[in-house]
Amino acid sequence: MLAYTIQLYKQAYSGLSKNSWYLCIVMLINRSGTMVVPFMSIYCIQQLHFSIVQAGTIMALFGVGSITGAFIGGKLTDRIGFYDLQVGALLIGGLLFLLLGYQCTFWGLSIGTFILSFCNESFRPANSTAIAHYSTGENRTRSYSLNRLAVNLGWGVGGAIGGVLASINYHLLFWVDGCTNIVAAVLLLTLMPRSKVAKTIEKHDKSVVKISAYKDKIYLLFILLATLFGMCFYQFFIMQPVFFKIQWHFTELFIGSLMALNGVLIAATEMVLVHSLEGKRNGLIYISMGVITAGIGYTLLNLLPHDKIAAIFIVILITLGEMLSMPFMNSFWISRTNPYNRGEYAALYTMSWSAAQVLAPFFGSKLITYGGFYLLWWLLGAISLLTAIGYMFLYNVKYRSA
Picture 1 (cartoon, helix red, strand yellow):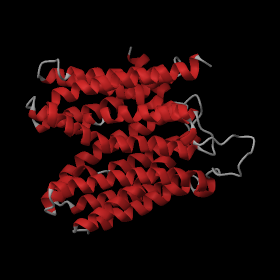
Picture 2 (cartoon, one colour; picture 1 turned 45 degrees about the vertical axis):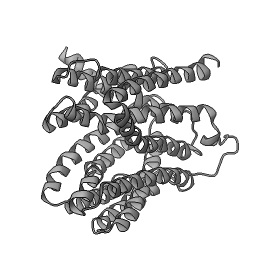
Picture 3 (cartoon, one colour; picture 1 turned 135 degrees about the vertical axis):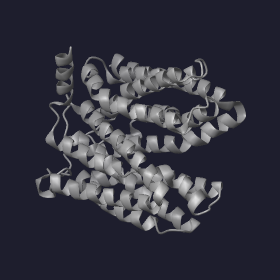
């Protein structure tokens, strides 16, 4: 059994290109420095003595900057290529983090946050395009899973270290976040020198039809469904911890352990899961299964007893839904692209998640205000069900009717 398990993991991680691993290392370094954003609201209120409304406005501007940056980043990726944009976004973003730490006024921090998030998010379409470029149809989903593994590991490391640094001096967060951005850029230049990277933007081949992502009706429906799922999924990090604290009376330590469980499960099992499933069924079927699994997890918050075993089970269920859906979502949008429009498609997909991140706390807080957590969890379950049905409809339209 042990030998079989080892072989399964070996197969899951084999066959990926060298550059896919390099991109994973760069992402891990970059995300390990993600410290400012999780603590920005606390920093604004406790250190700079801003009001809650001012802190909320700054975080909203971060979301608006993310959406705008993703849109422009996609356009630039298709014009100048993914390599230069990744390096530029990391270097400039690193410097902007250092500068942001010295902004003490509301307007200074607001403008700085918008520009920073604009720059940081422009990196994502370029990075997604790079992963597609260095993968094949056989390993593309696993290549994206490897990238997600780096993001989750980095986020866990950054959050843990960020909590320690914030207890010492909040300015350390800006310095570490900025420096890891710069280190990631230098690492990208070192591991993948520009002279050895194949040119990604070539003269347009007139035989290849360049379809705009904004005119692709099937893709636009996919994006709408992704946004709906994203609004549900982000409650896992936004409102669910608050619920566990207020309603189920868990300690911060246990709540933190539940959040860490999500990252550990992804790091330990997602690659093997994707390897086992890839190619056996259409990706839209797995996406639908994942969305409904997460939705069941949310509804169980209203049905299960208020104890730690139930909470662990719910976190495992929602994490399973995430692992079933998100890797195959990446594969779907890539399947609709060519080298001349991939940045635009990547941008729209990134924008859908940025929009969900902005909308999730707004609607979540409104629902809790009017109907309590009970209403929120039932509604998330209903939205997840409708979204899962939407993905199956997409599958029937795209593949069954073909």
